[in-house]
Length: 198
Image 1 (spheres, rainbow, N blue to C red):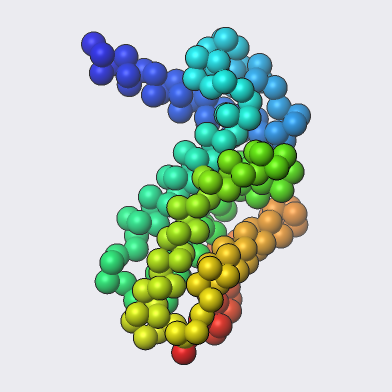
Image 2: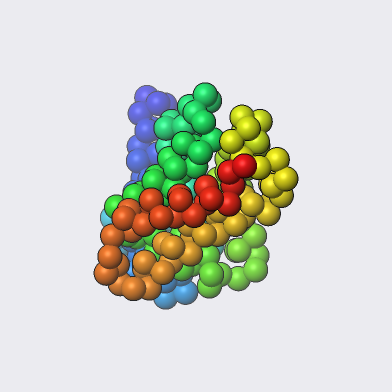
């Protein structure tokens, strides 16, 4: 009985997050009301507050859960014995193809991150931290494998790699998705590896 109840609560939680992602993508964070999210999720307005204290907490949870799922996919696809340059390619492929397939997630992760308040920005930054850490781990691995330059500034380079992918996705969104995002993978990875290799 308890596990069924927990499953139902998890289903409702996920339904609210899915609805919130859709509403935030359509109206933006500031133009979204909790009532719209509730209607999209098929729940009463008050039900939302059983799971989240505020609209801000919903947005933070969307970032934490959906980016967490993306990082989990990276870990599934990247093996411990993968050469670091192969791992960088896998990250870029998954980043671009995942966001190309989920336009709502792309809009929310790319655009809301730039428009949020400083406090909200910090919370979202915390949700991004495991992704940034993964890139750092791969850079360290590349140096240890003798593939990447030993003089890399790891902390700066991890941000440059993430920032470059982030900007490619943002430009694709701003263009109205007039071209294939996944078609940008080869040139992006080639650019990265030219700067990283010994």
